[in-house]
Amino acid sequence: MKQSSLGLSNTTKRTRKREFLDSMELVVPWAELVSLIEPYAPESGRRGQQPFAVQTLLRIHFMQQWFKLSDPAMEEALHDVPAFRDFAGLSRWDEHIPSESSILRFRHMLERHKLADQILDTVNAVLQAKGLQLKAGTVVDATLIAAPSSTKNQSGERDPEMHQSKKGNQWYFGMKAHIGVDADSGLVHTVRGTSGNVGDVVQANSLLHGQETDAFGDAGYQGADKRPDATEDVRWHIAMKRSKRQALDKDNAVDALIEQHEKIKASIRAKVEHPFRVLKQQFGYVKVRYRGLKKNTAQIVTLFALSNLWMARHKLMAMGQVRVQGA
Image (tube, rainbow, N blue to C red; front, side, top):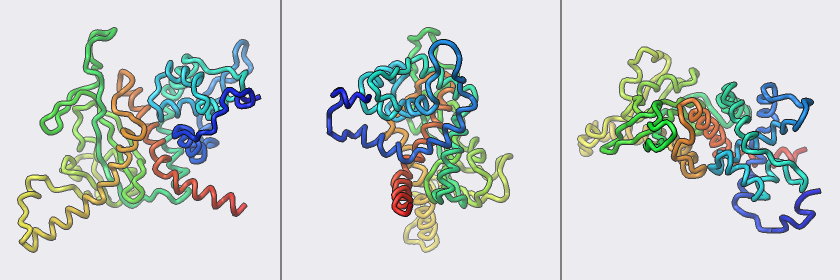
């Protein structure tokens, strides 16, 4: 018996949360992800309370990422928000709700077995099988993620794995998320997390998947092709430094061609901004939640896997409708 049958959720309004969850219900490859995680999950049959189904906990874990919810806040939301319970498969009136400890243990299990990277790989494999990811070129970039700079905590000090970084004339404290994005689809295929003081160019070649022929980056990636980890098979197309570009004479034929070339490179590099926009504006991820790079990087990798599904949702849903109509 569902709560709706008891009159506990008798609203007919289609809220934005429910619309969002309905679309994610259709585009997330649940079967593939559950098959990935199940071998690492606790087995049932033991005494006491039985573990929750992997799919239930995975859905809850994803809702935490989409709606910026901590473990305690997620447990409360499951009690308060019918749409969240329905999405998690907990809509029966007598259904047991996972506690914040259960939610925490599931996240720790994902971190312990480094499943965030495998989740991203699984999502990308599904997208590539549907023709939504190409392998010709990669755009690289990095973004700063702020961390609490206050020392008013249990240890009395800032997170030692986070560092200051200067962008323009402004100093930031936190970490960096470095990503490699498919130059055609704009989907993320590689993610690296570092402290905020690591230079972008240091991570440049580690963001390539190895099958591309061209790579694109802004002026911060100058010299990427000359680093020890660079490969001869990849042509780097790096933006001209701003000062040099501003010095171009637009009335000069050669300089005009250079300017046109820079605009073409910039239009390709623009693809890398879309995942950052989804991460920070759609999912609201602008500050790290945990201490240490390992936990925060795992969350960021998961967020980029979900951002790929979000950006490809219209095509995926259209494919699903075609398949249903042709069945």
